[in-house]
Length: 133
Image (tube, rainbow, N blue to C red; front, side, top):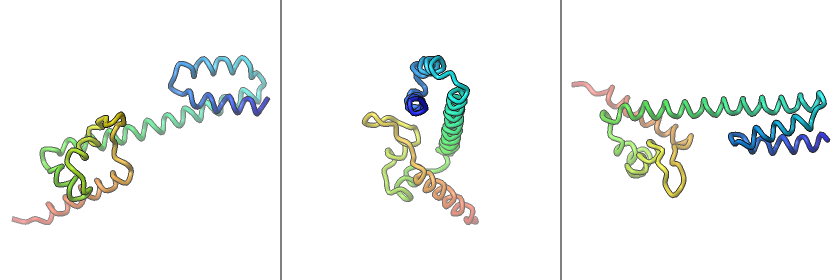
């Protein structure tokens, strides 16, 4: 029975965010009624909710970064950043900044690209800060 429950919980994880999730959970609670089963179901659902919270925090952080970058678009050249630091075109940079859908895929900066972008902004900041008139 425990093997079946673990299989059911794996299936449940795959259904997160769909109407089938609630139906599946309700059905499981009717079948798996022992205290141990209930504990395992509760732990699984708690873990799923924790993961959702972490994912939402990651998305919020990414949105905040993108808003910050967009706010300086009139001050600095994204063309310069994309060509100098990424060796890519302005349109490549813009697609990621605006999370455009290209060939059915949402374009986003990878973690490595975000590190490159942070470095680029810090480098530009140092260059501007070192100027004296």
